[in-house]
Length: 477
Ligand code: SF4
Image (cartoon, rainbow, N blue to C red; front, side):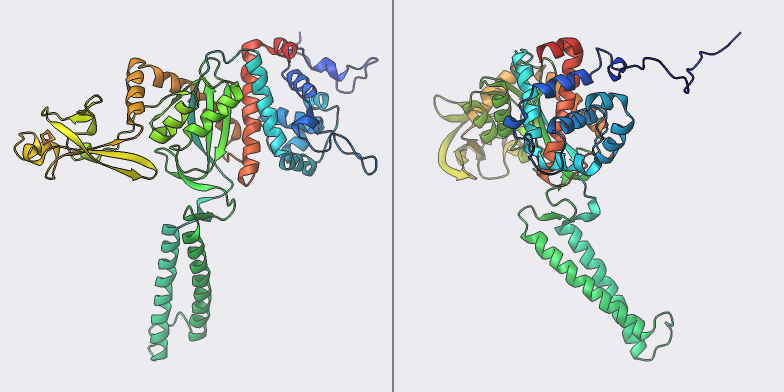
C-alpha cells in the first residue's frame, strides 16, 4: 500500500496541454490587475510610448510594464532584477504579461521615466474607490512615518558630524607633528615612524582636512544645514524613540471607514508640523469635496496649519501640543487663565483681570499680550506659583479662538484619537513590512514618490479585493 500522495511524472506528455489560463483561478488577484490596467487610458495619463514609432525595434507596451510593476508591488517583488527573473519562471506573470520577459534595464527605466504617470495611476484607483462610495464618511486620519532612504548615516553630513571629523583629524595631525618634532630633535625613543613616513601621513591628513573643510562649508551653506551624499534629497530624521535615520517623511491620509489610503505624499520635511494643510488639500482633491474631517496627532498642532484647513472647509481635530515652559517650571500654564471674549481680558487663578496691552507679529502671526497689574501681583498669595517676574503676562495668538473651539470639540469626542491610531498606523506597518529592511530602492525625491505610489496602489488594491472580492471588483472596474 502506498503511503504518500503521489506526484506527477514530469516526463509525461499530454495530448491536450493545459492553457496558461487554466492555471489562473477566477479569484486570482492578477485578474484585477489585468482588468484595471486594461481600462486605463494610458496615453491620457501620460505614459511614454503608448503609440509606437513606425521604425526601429518594437518596444514593450506600457501596459505590460505597468502590470509587471503592480504585480511586483503586490507580491513584495520591487526590484527590477527580481521582476526580470520572475517573468521567466512565474506562471502568474506569464499569464499577466503574455509570456513576455523584459530585461531589468527596460523594467527599471519604465519606473524611472514614468513616475508622474504611475503616481496618477494610484490616484485613478482612489477615484474608482470614491465612485464605489467607499469614502462616504469623508473622515480621514493623517499621519507621517519615516522611511529609510538609500543613504547611510555615514554619508550624511551635519554640522556636528563635520565638527567631529575635523576634531579627529586635527588631533591626529597634532600627534604626528609632535612625533616629527621629536624625530627632528634626535629623540630616538619612537622608532615606529620614520621622518618620511610621518611627512607622508601629514600630507595625506592635510589633504583630508581640506576636503573636510569644503564639506563643512557646503553643510553650513545648505538651507537644512545637512547634506546627504548618496541621495541628496534625503534628510536625517528623528524616528520617534527609535533614534535617527536618513530617509523621507511619508505623509498618508487613511479613510476611517474602510481603511483605504486616500492620499499620500513623500516629503523630506524634518517634522509633521507643517504637513496638515497640504495633506488635507490632497484628500479634498481626491474625494472631490471640501467638507471633510481630519484627525491628526499632536505633532501636527500648529495654529496656522489648522486655520488653513478650516479656511478650505475641512474640520481638523488635533490635540494640543503641550510645550509650556511655565508648566515645566512648576508655574501656572496659559490653560489656567480663562479668556473672557466679551471683555477681551484674561482672568487669572486669583480671579484678577489681565488687560490687553500691545500687539506684535511673530513669524507672520499676530500675537496680543495681556498683563496683570503689577501692584495686584505683588500682593497676590499665588505669585510664587504664577510668575517669577514683576507681573504675569499671557499671550494670545490670532488662531487661539479656533484652537479653543477645536479643543472643546475634541473633548466631546474622546475616542477621536483612538480611531486615528487604529486607522492610520496599520497601513504604514504593512507597507514597511512589504518593503523589507531597506525601505526605498531608488534615490531622489521624485523617484521615491513613484515607489511610494506603487506601494499605496498595491495596498489599496489588496484592501478593496478583501472588502468586495475579486470577481465583484473586476465587475465594477
Ligand atoms: S500673580 Fe498676578 S496674575 Fe498671578 S494669580 Fe496672582 S494676581 Fe493673578
